[in-house]
Length: 154
Image 1 (tube, rainbow, N blue to C red):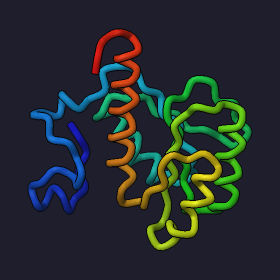
Image 2 (cartoon, one colour):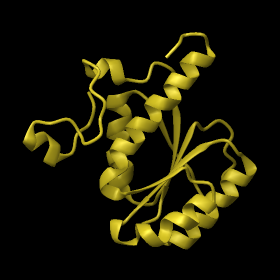
Image 3 (cartoon, rainbow, N blue to C red):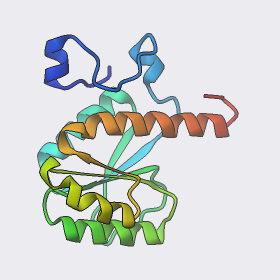
Image 4 (tube, helix red, strand yellow):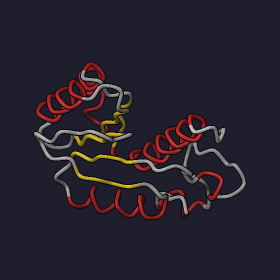
């Protein structure tokens, strides 16, 4: 089942910008997607772990100094120590270029953080409130690319 925000659920609507393709099953990843998370916030970890269980991808926490070898998507929390997290992102991506990266943080600071996060290698920088939907979209896109590469089409 696709996770929806409480506001969307109350309104009985799909999340803003979500593709409606008939059923939730049509949106589930079919290939194995490994998502790494750089965050010390247990609530963020919990929310993403629930999304991973429901949406069918593997979530792995990434610690500073870790060597990442097989991640498909890297999520970086900019809520605490954004400059340190952006530096960590740049360092991780320098060692393993080509990994898709999404940063997330407080919406009031995104205008300041987004250019630095993108310069460090993030493809997207979203507000905390948009994180789950951004992860869903990224996982589906990665899964479709994997399936196409394996000859399964998209």
